[in-house]
Image 1 (cartoon, rainbow, N blue to C red):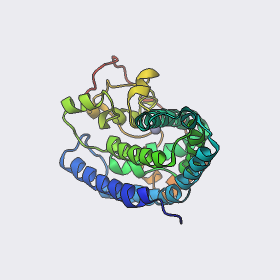
Image 2 (tube, rainbow, N blue to C red):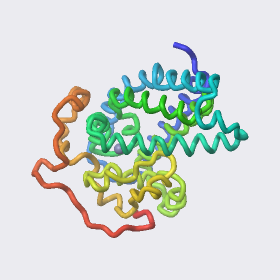
Image 3 (tube, rainbow, N blue to C red):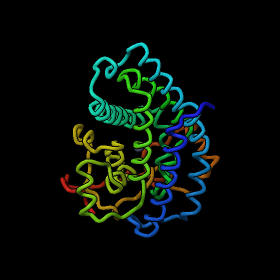
Image 4 (cartoon, rainbow, N blue to C red):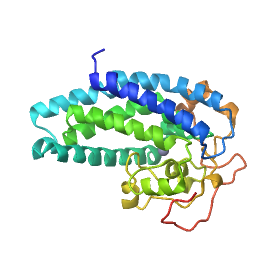
Length: 286
Ligand SMILES: [Zn+2]
């Protein structure tokens, strides 16, 4: 395995520390009431993520990095053509890549073959920092293609790709965490960033709410596409996917197999589709 020094010596230890800090913060200052055993979910999400971690390190980073090197050499891709100053390259990389990931997340919900895999992430019955690692390895394999295409199209520099990826993962850990920030502070952060309350709405069993808040780092893309929802108080949200609410159906083996089974329509086991009437709000609800 070829070393990626910035990821191996800086990114990975940094993300591991952030994970532990957020684990402590969400335990000390919880946001939503948890309904299931934290330890159970932690172990399950961790084991489920092991093949994903391996894919990230062995393919999902090395392949786009190799493409970034190749694109730079051949002068391919938007940022390689523009010859911008460094500060502008940094800003452009973050904006272009985060916006591309907004579309990728949208595709994961809207294109049935992708949803089969992304569904596994959403079936978590509580939401916390460990959910950030709960991705089916199939989703990671698909995202190699997406990431490679984005890197070539935009002409992302290899180093900037790694810097962006570390930030992207840190943002993912943060907005999945169950850490209760003061609402005042979170509303300020939510002018720029995707925050835990905002992403909590994305994990609701109400389909209209799941089909919103697709951003990862910046909340602006949802604003741009009118898919930003801030009107649901956290204690009104039931986390999960309506059709997959039984714990015994969400064991490790069944989660790995889930994408390859017939997908159930978005309804509760009772047959009813969860719905809610709310008034669109500019301010993030408590
Ligand atoms: Zn999603």
